[in-house]
Image (cartoon, rainbow, N blue to C red; front, side, top):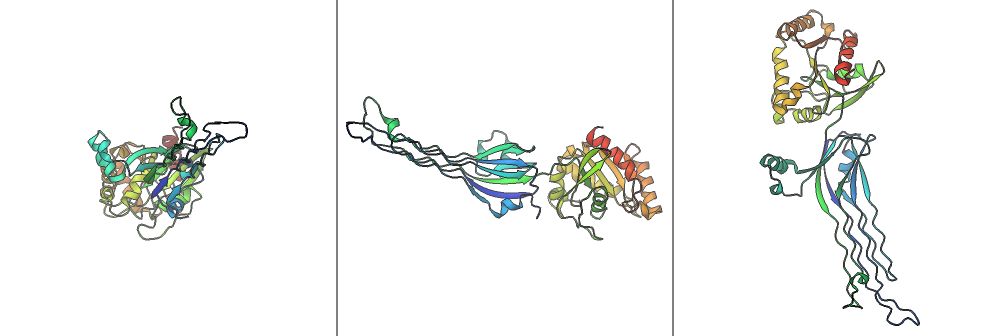
Length: 345
């Protein structure tokens, strides 16, 4: 399944059924009076969070969603049947924006500016089973029975059914994970995810092998950690360079971060500051999340040790670990600390 975290959909609630103009006609019943029934209500459209869906790809293939219309009313005071509601499964963590609401109706200027880019926020779906009504079905038209009065005992008018709501929606997915793995391209994030979980992300000796978030489940000491490998970060990522937006949007909801650092001859502090600058420029709250600083590739020997000592000297209070995904060195200690900060155990 192709991972897709943004999709534009066009939804239409079902139209209401028409009311009926009818009169009772039976032998030996003179002046039977009006007996036209109301039309049925059109179907509504709901989005429902589901743990069985993890991408918006299928929705993007069929972007037009329409609910059934209500049936027309009939004689003998028979009401039309309501149209069936449509329930669309979306991934947990989906945010729904309405592109058809004018931004000018929002009082806050900042919210107006955001709404012009994405639309007006309709809601978020974070837990399985949560539902959001995104398009209401139209009301059914009234039959002529509803217009009967002392002054109009034989009404011949009936209402047409009302149209359902039509909206253009933008869906944005922010994955829900306990831990996000952050770092520059080629720092070894995919290798670490493959070591910790049963996930099999693409691993290669060139940057940006990860082009979309990959999730893996780590079972550690009877605990479950959902870990996300996010596309690599480069300078200017908060402005959209590289795959920056793909990284930063998904890391917002993680409980803790692994800041993975690749050993380098020239030193690693500038690489660390680059990642921190980009996270802070996107959202300052990212820097306040619990974070483990992890030097990867301990199997490189003295180079990895020098990078580790450099960080320990410059950041003495940091939760710092030296690991190797090839040999498993330091992984146990890192996982113990990760479980403590991510699951508060």
